[in-house]
Image (cartoon, rainbow, N blue to C red; front, side, top):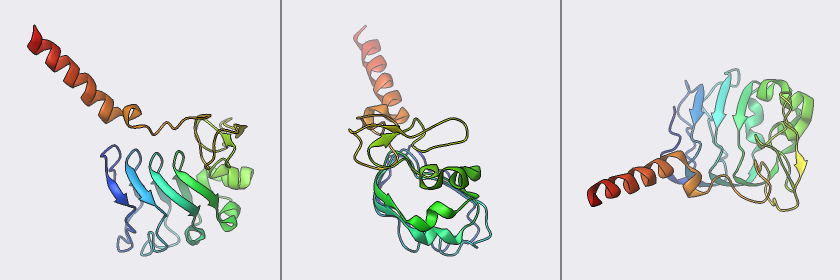
Length: 170
């Protein structure tokens, strides 16, 4: 399911009845609140998953309920997480082995740090110090990349509107 850049609001749905789900992209929306405890409850634990929940307003601790999955690629950067359940940090296959190499930093950089992808990675991304970041998973130092004008859909709409009204004025 790909629903990125749709200005979706409200809490993150649990998708607890979608047993065949293998990929879920809800990035660049305005979803808020914690990851539900029943999130992806019907998906078999042996399923390889791709999850992109980045650039929302998700809060709380990244839930240890996700430990039932052994092979996950998960993007959570630029939310308002204040922690990661320690059990997730031992999921060595997650994020193509980055959790095995970098522990929790392979899921999200801790508060007080940032990385261009919001986590450490074998591709060279590291969690760098930034006292301005109070949440886990920051991709910039001191400002959120999840601001409304930075979102492609909003910016495109703004450019279209300005161009349209300029054409009418001529």
